[in-house]
Image (cartoon, rainbow over all chains, first blue to last red; front, side):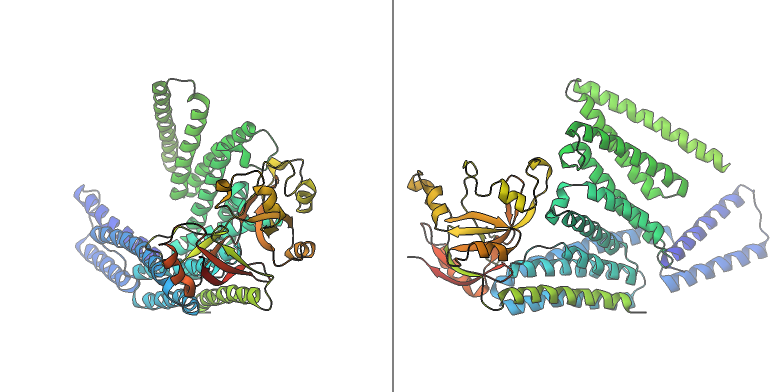
Amino acid sequence: MTRQEAQRRADRIRLFRAELAELEGESALALLPEQKDRLERHLTATLAHLAAAFDVDTTESQKQVSWGMRIASTLGGLALCAAVVLAFYRYWGVIPIPAQVMVLGLAPLVCLAGVEYASRRETTLYFTSLIALVALAAFVYDLNLLGSIFNLEPSPNAFLAWSVFAFAIAYRYGLRVPLAAGLIGAIIFLSAAAVSWTGAWWEGCAMRPEWFVLTGAMTVAAQFAIPHRRFPEFAGAYRLVGLVALYLATLVLSMDGATSYLAFDHKSVERFYQFLGLVETAAAMWVGIRRGWSGSVNLAAVAFVVFLYIRLASWWWDWMPHYLFFLIIGLISMGLLVAFRRVRGSLKGALA
Amino acid sequence: MRFAGLMVAAAVVIAANAAALLSAARNRAGTPDTVMELTERELGLEYQNEQDSGVSVRLSYSLNYADPTPWLGPHGLAALGFDTRLPDRQLPRHAYVAFEYDGSAWRKFSAGRKPEEIAGLSHLCPIDAARTGAELRRRHPDRGSVLILPCTIDARGYIRDVLTGSISVPPKFHALFAAVRSRTGRPRYALKLAVGIHYEPYVTGARLLP
């Protein structure tokens, strides 16, 4: 059992207890005293075991505190990353180059040791996650600064190195933030490598978002190819990162047809990608609802609305009175609410 | 294997650092492709805030894109792999560019301009480009006046970026720049710039100019 599975079991037990009390209060269920005792002992023992073995939250208050700890861990990680980078900037000009190289090379290794040490001391992995963020930042900064010190030509291989490093940390400790960083690095590397293969300079991938449409879709598809038995929640990270890349790239193409490989006039290209954006998001919502991927559904819903509003703005903003434009947007939003309510109702009917 | 992830992460750090350092060492091994002294006009100080103790200079060049005889014509662009029929649809490409220092290209650029217009301008002018530095050096063997650097060029012949244009100055020369800041007039300093066998530049000397 993973920690996430243990937490879900603890949450189910907590909700079960609350619902049981509700049913007893409504006289819908009456357990015999010995049944109630045995059940209560079993639930208490199970929760105690889960808390001891996985350090899960067994009460609502603990869950809220844990959220606070996760936020603190992320913010603390980001602040430490900034501190490491700025400290080096402050002092690198006064230390000789061999010392600079040594500090840069050792920093990610020392942080890696810190991650391993922290992971052995805690089961919640808050400190592990924080130090892992710093390790990632240290490695990114390491290669960037080596390039600056020795005036090396920029290369997309750095993204491959960062991505592999992030994946190694993610899969070793079950951390989703490094996984997301690894996926982003992989998407950039693959897009840059593809552009290089066409003969152009690799940084040109930023001027041809179609590569990110492709690599974003590949990332979403990768969740099916990789069986995440040890960390089932990783599949969601592949989906979300892939979908964000896909939607952002489609959005850019829908607003600037000049960035496309397609050999049509810019307006036609933009219309095509605006339509494609609506199709992508609608399809993602449909699949997400059927599979119970709530994160993907929410993301797709936001992206759908953004694509729709951009389309409407490109049709109407220039000639329609602005108050009328916003009135129509409001009415469309209400129409979407009605449509989503009908979808929700049909899903409830399917359950019944 | 229990520690596989940890070992992979550590191995990637070590391998990436080793690759970068080896590349830098190979670039600086043997005889440099060029060693040239350039002034503040060609290697201007980059902006530096008080939180940053590093010093870097940026290479600049002079080029008149409106010149009816462009520095890189259709034949040169085609040799880099561009289809000159569709200049707007193509991404920039990597190329090595030959920059001539204080030569005929600079005299052509500065001809007809007032002295105050050209006073602070770089005397480096691009004169040619090719896919490889070796090919370019064969065409321009004068290492004393022609510098070859990696750049990106677009299909219209614009130099989009000098890839190694931001050049870090080693800490041992930083004291000079503290003195430079209190001086007026340009150029205030000269830097000896070497370009290695991979056409990556590095600073090997610095002096104040009278």
